[in-house]
Length: 330
Image (cartoon, rainbow, N blue to C red):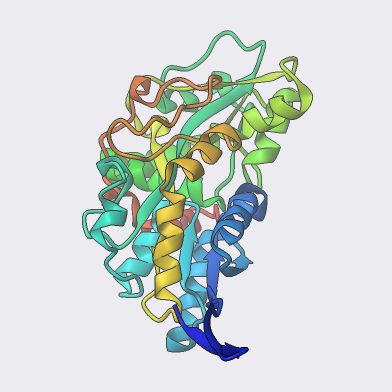
C-alpha cells in the first residue's frame, strides 16, 4: 500500500494513503430493474465506480463491435447466450481465469471459457389460471383449437434463443414448419414477455411463450389471485429449455482487474442468492453451493430440460434470418 511519510515532533509516522479502486464499464442487455440493485451492492462492497449502459442484448453486442478498439466496455452482460456467442466468435471476449469458470456448472457455460452464466431462466408456457386443457409439448400449439389464443415475442432474444435451440434439436425444416404453422394459427405478436403474462391474466390469450420469472414478479405485486400460471413442459423439447443470462470480459477493456472482480462477485453465493430470492431465477453454481431456489419454483434438477450446449444456442443471427424471411421481424 502506498504510504506518505509525515514528521510530527521529530517522530516519523507512516500513514496509509487510500488507493483508488478504479472504475468499471458494463454494457448490459439485461434491464436495470433486474440487475441494478446487485451492481450497486458490488459498488458498495468494492468501492469500484460502475458505469452501466443498458439496451437490448444483440444491439449492445453490435455496438461493441462498431466501437472497435475504442469501446469503453469492460463487461458485456447479455440476456441470453446468443449475444455472447456472437461477440466471442468475433474475438471480442477474452478467455476467463479458471477460478471464475470453475465455480459455474457445465450446463451454464461454453467450452471455450470466454464467458460464464450468471443466472438460469426456464422457458415456460404462461397460461390463464383457469385453463385446464393444457398442451404437453410446443408441437401441440399448432393445433387448430389454439387458433387466435396464443402469444409470442419474435423480437425478444430469449424467444430467439429458444428457436435457435429448436433448430439444433429439430433441424431447419421442422423448425420452419412449426413457425409457419404457428403464424397460420394467428399467434399474437407482443414486444416482450411482460405483456404476454398480462394478456394471459386478462384472458386476451390463453397461452404465451415466455421466461418463467415474469409471472412471479406479477404475483409478488398483485398476490396469488393473479389470473395466470406457468406450465413447465416435461417433454424435454425446446419449449422446456433452460438458458442463462451471462457475461464476459471485453478484450479492449481498460479495467480488466475490476472486470474479473465483478464476475467473481456475480458468481458468488451472495449474488446468486439475490437472483434466486429477488428475481426468481435459478443459480448456476457447480456442486453443493448452498444457494436455495425460490420456494415458488420447481427445483432445477426436476426440470426435463433438453441436452443443449451453450454453443447450440449461439446462432441467433441464423434465427433472425429465418424470422425476417417469414416476415416476423422488420
